[in-house]
Each structure stands twice: as structure tokens, then as C-alpha cells.
Length: 322
Image (cartoon, rainbow, N blue to C red; front, side, top):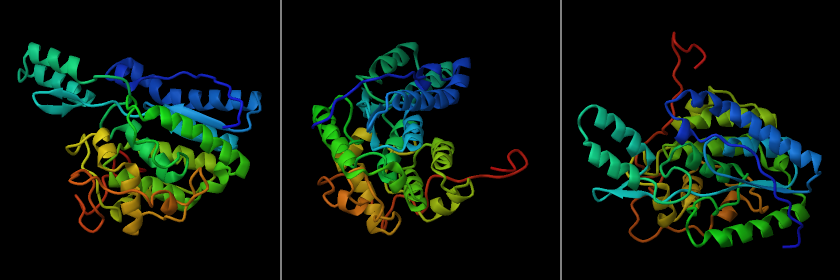
């Protein structure tokens, strides 16, 4: 595509490994270390542009935070979701294993079944398959404008992933030639789009702490009190695990994250005039999205799965500030 690439690495903490252990105390701290390390190398080597490949847990928000600080042409490229496993004729993810451990402890699942489930739940590479932190953030970053539309939905082991990587190289060089910077993309409406994406998919509550951190880096006035208002006007239009039936791979097969975004734009929930890394608006970038015939994963704003979003900020004597 005309550029001279330089590959660098950073660290990562896997919540899937540290879950339920002292190691989880390192998880959120790692977000700051990852962001700092990306920023440090990019500044030190004076990169003209950057593509940040990220996947699980804190790597996605950390990548976005680093990109915002650097304010050079660039975007976050999601590694992609894992395919679901199969257990007793149904799709399962890593969370089914967590629940299986509890069921086994309570005497509701045999040791043999738990072992079969553990061996089946993660059949390949990729981020956890439900609408957990990774897939929530990946979709939200597309809607925010820090990831190219149509790339995040493709599973990690999908044959099309190689083409996505090649296309990413073309996009970053085009973005560099345009001189399009994150600071030109990141507006208050763009952050509202990001939150709406998470609300509409029943996404991870981690979107709250990550979007607040990203907004702070971008100098955007966003507070925890904004989430209830956005969630209240955003219906749930995707039936996704852990609260629903389907996985991220099912979203891809149904029409992709871009289909969800397009329907949110059509329903007046998302501002389609906001920019994406290609220079197109969200409306332009999602215009091609069409539902796969017979799909049951993505609903419409007019006939949603639930009338209001999946996020509610609670306040009380235990958490007076929410």
C-alpha cells in the first residue's frame, strides 16, 4: 500500500486466565501500562501513522487511549472473536465454563461433563465469544470512529481475516494521505454513538470505565451520569450472550456490526454524520450492510428485543457517585 511498516509489541493481561484470582488486580492497571508503552514507542520512533492490533480485555481501550494521545493517523484493528464451542448440541463460550464450575461444585454437573465442556468451549484462537468486554469494545470502537467499519465482526480464524489485514494497510495509507486525525473524529456525538452501540447490544458494563477514560484523554466532557440518558433512549436490538442467545460469530453471519450500526442510524439513535477512519461518515460506511436472509440475531429499533438499553448506573449509600 506504499508504507514502510515497523512492528512493535506490548504486554497484556488475560482476564480469562486471571479470573477469580489475585491476578485480576493487575488487569485494569495493565490498561495504563499498555497505553503508555504504545505511546512511548510511537513517539520515540516518530511514527507517521499507526495500526494498533488488539483483542482481549484491556488491550482495546488501552490502544484507543494511546491513539488519542498520539493524535496521528491511525486506528484500532480488532483481532476478532473466537468461534463458539459445542456442548450438548448448543453453542458455548468461556462463560459457560465458569458457570459449569459452579454447577459442578453445587452437584448439578458431573466431573465428566465439566471436563467435556472445558475441552469444547474454546475451539480455536480469538477473544471470548459473547458480548463481553472485547466484543463490546470492538463494536463500540467502530461506532466511535476509531476502527474501520466492517473489520471488527470478522472472527479471528475466518479465512477472510487475511484480506482484512491487507485492507487495513490500504486504509491507513489513505488516512495518512488525507491527514485525518483522531482529534477530527472524536466528538461528543461520536462518544454518544459508542455508548449507544454497547447499550444496543447488551454489552459489557466495562464500557463505562473505558469510555470515560478515553473521553478524558480526548478532552470530551463525558460523565457517568450521561450513561443512563443514552441507555434510556437506546433499545436492545441484538440478542447476544451472556444475556441473550447468540455469539459474536452469529453477528458476523447475520450481517455484521455494521448492520447493527446502520439500524441504529436509521432509528435515530446513532448520529450517522460522524466520521470513520476512511473519511466516510458512519452513514456512508454502513450503507452496504444488509441482513442475511433468515437471521434472528439483529432486530430493528422499531421492533427491538428490549425497549431500553442494557446499562443502568445505580446510586445509593454503597455508591453515592454511581
